[in-house]
Amino acid sequence: MDIPYTNQPWLSFKQPLVQELAFSIASPSLLADWPVSLVSGPKKGLLPAQGLTPELKLPDHHFWQLQFANYLPRLLQLDTNPLPLEQHMLSLRSTRLGIRFEHLLAFWLQDNAYHPFTLLGQGIKRMDGQRTIGEIDFLIFNQDTRQTEHWEVAIKFYLGEGNLQAEHWLGPNRRDSLDRKLKHLYQHQFDVTHAKQHTIDLRRAIVKGRLFYPAGAAMCFPSWTAPQHLTGFWGEIVPVAPPGFTWRYASRQEWMVAKPDGLTTKPLSGHSIIQNPVYWRSGLYLLLDAENKVILHYMLRITDKMHKSLNNDNTLKPNPNAADIFNQISII
Image 1 (cartoon, rainbow, N blue to C red):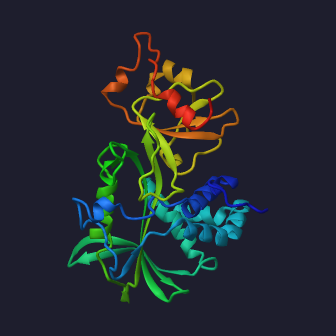
Image 2 (cartoon, rainbow, N blue to C red):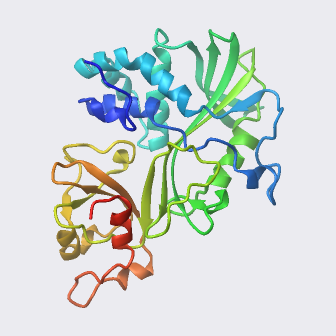
Image 3 (cartoon, rainbow, N blue to C red):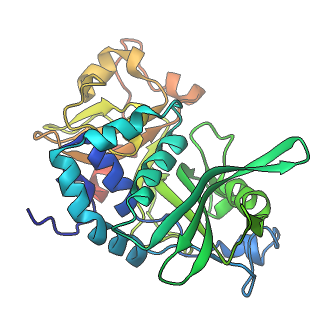
């Protein structure tokens, strides 16, 4: 079975866990470069300048394409027999998506017959006397370069506001932001030069996930984003689905890869959302076509404005941005 590299190659696999593993490897980075406003703007110094030692890299799309291509034979094996991956995931105690993402990458890194990375340690505690001040996600020896690498990994879902600068990309609950995450990554998580008696030669910041653009606005990618990064829209109400399409509320785990059978969630048409306002809750909604294929990722952030979007008879008032969203993805 030959699976070509597409923009979503993880969907080519049958097993849900294998899809998640393939997503963790093949999905593109969010960042192509450090946001200039955090390097030389008013927040100068929050992020690394050129020439720092050890070097801090953002793995690019080519890096992940290569890793996916090299690991494809193993993914095909696991798609036939997922037991080793299933057993590995049984040791996962946390329900947090970031921990799950890290756990999936750990499985791949331990399969070092398919890449040059030898895993020296995971979740290595950093101590200040008796106090834990942080952890190193992955300590790795690169067999090709003979260098010791420190990897920090994150999967993030940010909603863009304002001028879409780094400080205006916020998490669904607004307590998290891209600039705050990058500042913490650089100033705290990478503030280490030695681990387990190894000198760190190279650092890699792995930041994946999806960026959600304001519904109805032009989708202008900031210059620091990777051209291939995953995208969606966000708004304060969910538009009524066009004829032939339905909405489905996604479980938190599906923020990485939507489950094709939708067993964990209840399918919703545009009409049933209106008739059942209990489903109006913040989170990710998937727009599905007649074949149950995901056409659009839409993040709903509920505010007081949402309650004003319903008429007295509990039907939805027109959303002026809805047609713009659907026109942008060429379905009407």
